[in-house]
Every structure is written in C-alpha cells, then in structure tokens.
Image 1: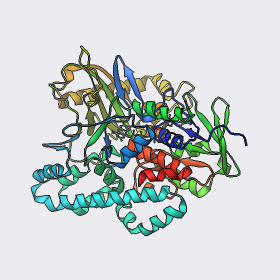
Image 2 (image 1 turned 90 degrees about the vertical axis):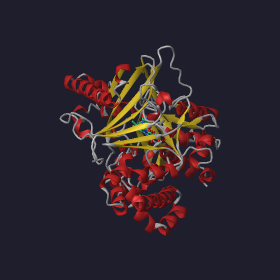
Image 3 (image 1 turned 60 degrees about the vertical axis):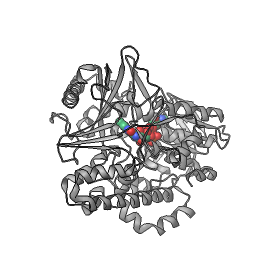
Image 4 (image 1 turned 30 degrees about the horizontal axis):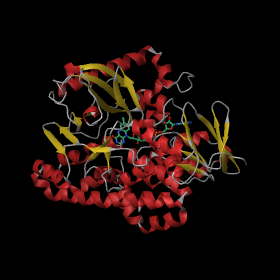
Length: 517
Ligand SMILES: Cc1cc2nc3c(=O)[nH]c(=O)nc-3n(C[C@H](O)[C@H](O)[C@H](O)COP(=O)(O)OP(=O)(O)OC[C@H]3O[C@@H](n4cnc5c(N)ncnc54)[C@H](O)[C@@H]3O)c2cc1C
C-alpha cells in the first residue's frame, strides 16, 4: 500500500498533538485531522468582545522544572512553552463556615488542615500516606497497561494487590478509613471537580494522582492554553507533518484487522498503516467497521460511562478586580457540606450546589488589561447530560449547538442558567459583580458540538475503579496499527492526556519511553 504519512492522528486535543509531536521528534511525518475550525481540543481558546477565554485549562499540576510532565512537554514543544507558578494559594476551598487555602509546600497544606481539624491529626497523616502510595501505584498501573504486553503485563501482575487496593477502591472508601469526621471527609474530597467523578464513584488512584500533582504547587502556561496547539503544531510542522482543521474523520478503514487509513467526511481517503485516535474511546469505536472489531474489547469500552457534563460561565470584567477580591487561586464554593453532589437537575434546582471560580487573566503574566482594565473569570458547575439530552441535535448539518439554539426552550434555559450563576457569583463576590460587562454560558450541548465529546462530557470516560482496571483502555488495540491517545488512554487533565499521547507514540518509537524514566 502506498502511503505518504507515517501516522495519521484523529483529533488535535493535547493527547493527539502530543502523540504527533513526539513522533515528529523521531523523524516521522504525521498528519493530524481535526473536525473543528481550530486545533487544541479542550486547550483551545475563544474570544468575545476582546476578552479571551480558555475552555479546559484552569491550572496545571506536576509541571515544576524537575518533574516528568515538564520534561515531556519541553521535549515535544522544543522548550518553547513557558510555565509560571501560581503565586500564593492555588486553591481555596470554601465550605460553609470554613475556608481552606491550599498553597505549597506540602507541610503548609498539612498545617492548614490540622489547624482546621485539630483532633484529626493522625487521620490527616494517614490520608497523605495513602495519597503517596496510591499515586505511585496509579502511575505504575498506567505505565503497565500502556507498555507493550511483554513488559507491561508482568509489571501489572507483580503489582496487582496494590493496584486492587489503591486503584480498585473509591475515594470515599479510602477516606472513610482514615477519618470518622464527616467535615474532614468533605474537605479532603472537595477537589473532585478536578477529575469529574464524585468521591463515592471515583477511583482513589485518580484522586491521589491529581491531588498529589498540586502538592508542589500549580502552574499556568504563559499566553493561555492556546500555546499548546501553537507550539506543538510547530514541532509537527518542523517534522514535515501537518494539522488539518475542518477535517472530520468519518471512518477508520480496516482490512483483515489492520488499519489502512481514515476516510474523511468529505469522502477523501488518507492511507496510513498507523492511526492514533485522540477522539475518545467511545467515538473511536463508532468510527470502526463493526465487522472488524473484537467483541470483548468493544463490550468493555461500551460499558464504561461518560464522565459528567458541566455548565461553563465566561465573564468579562472591567476594573480593579484584584482590589475587589479576585486573585489567582481557584475558589471552590460548596453551598453545603454534602460535597458528593453535582447540579443534578438545573431545570428545577435554582442554585448549583458547587462552583469552581477562577480568574485566569490574573495568572497570565502576558495578559494586558489595557486602559479598560479587562479581566476574565471562568465558572464551572457540574451537571448531568440527562437534563440536556432532549436537545441532542447530533444529526444537524450546522452542528449540535446551532440546532439547539434554534429551540426556544433551550435558549430560555441557557439564559436562566446564566442569570442564576451570575446571581450566585454576586453573592460570593459582591464587589466584583458590578464589574461584569460580558457573560456567556456553555452547556454540555456546546461541548459536544465543539469537541465531539460524548454527552458533552467534561473529562472523557468517568474516572471509576472499573475504568482504570479495564484491560481495554490502553494504547494498543486489538486492531493492528490502531492506537488510543489522550485522556481515555491515561487520565483526565492536560498532563494525563499528554501522557496518553506520548505513550501511544512510544508504542511506535520505543526510544520515547526514556522520557518517562
Ligand atoms: C471546563 C474544563 C476545565 C478543565 N480544567 C483543567 C485544568 O485546570 N487542568 C487540567 O490539567 N485539565 C483540565 N481539564 C481537562 C483537560 O482539558 C482535558 O483532560 C484534556 O484537554 C483532554 O485532552 P484530549 O486530547 O484527551 O481530548 P480533547 O481535548 O477533547 O480532544 C479531542 C479532539 O478530537 C477531535 N475529534 C473528535 N472526533 C473527531 C473526528 N471524528 N475527526 C476529527 N477530529 C475529531 C475533537 O474535536 C477534539 O479537538 C478541564 C476540562 C474542562 C472541560
């Protein structure tokens, strides 16, 4: 078969870009195909009336100068992406009557928790010990499943007991073991919005990996999250590759259980003996001819649920926001001590039980507020897809968001959600509310429309123990030459999705494993 590309990547999220850029550094020519008009997936940014917003990046963990994520990013981006540490607290957890500021070093966080819960010092120490052990085990489990079988399988077998103990149990199960205090349990699990599955449902392994990544502090990419698309695109271009936008893959073509390339929605066929999919595991399955798919593998994947959806509220502000109470931390607002709840039915429930509020422009040293002192605020509230499923216009030729926007009740709900979130924001940040000049909400319909995410999911597949124990979710698939990249092959988050991309590439170019030493 004649083929001009060493590999074709479906989707230009950070997972797909990382896979393509890593292969480019090994001399491979890679074509990245992206359905949307701009590259980056959830790392894309958008502008409204002069304010620029990120879609899927508030802050990044594990990007300190000596950390593995940074080494990998520097390799694939040629050292051109600059990260700045978030000064002071990177998270501030507000529970009724208690605010916990989280800032490095780790000892400071321990002190904050022990001051707030003086009788629970032993439980807090036990929790941090569990975090260390679970994060290390999770790292090993992810490596083992993504390495080629002869290397990965023995490693997983040797560590099977630890994997079952730390990855196979929920966050709530482990936290219940370390403390009886319901308020401490709530405080320790409040950051679950970072990986999108409630403490009662999430694997403690993902909780530990994500939480631990911020113990050394949090980072922000100078210039905002669009730098990932720009700089990784440059690496891909320098290697003779290309990113094509508005190029939706309609089918991955397979013959005799081996990929032969992809067919675009336009009808064009691009031949390649290697296809890496960053489109998400469920979407990848939909792109495959059913007759060529291994039944057991497909069943394992189909049975995994999509993660939660979310409402995003993007605010443009004008004025001295720092003097009015904004800072660089993420503020996690819980309206009650029941942190296990999302906004299950925004149609009937007037207020979100939890909000994540951040001011990205205060983190970015390249942000120029100008004479109008422009700043941005991004708010996230988790919701169920079921509340939006009736506006699923995936067959609309103009796109899902355009289809839904034509329906009056959808537009009315969106307007009501905007008002209600604005009012809630105003209660918590009364001095900032008068500075809001612009507000726009996104729903799971918006996310599904712009990234193709199933059910507008915030983080790909739900981060349950079952997902992380499933043998189906790994770089290699039963179809020769087809690999999975991105968050579903590893963990949610920019670092997790990037590693998912890197490990897919390392299955083709083993020299790349050395970056993970
Ligand atoms: C609101 C929000 C806040 C977040 N905050 C943070 C944070 O602060 N820190 C952090 O580390 N992570 C955060 N995340 C998570 C992080 O953004 C994601 O985990 C990560 O970007 C996912 O990357 P990916 O490459 O796996 O997938 P995606 O970014 O979803 O990329 C998939 C790409 O595939 C394309 N595609 C799909 N189907 C096709 C097709 N058939 N043909 C061509 N292209 C296709 C899509 O258009 C998309 O561009 C956040 C996410 C959200 C939604």
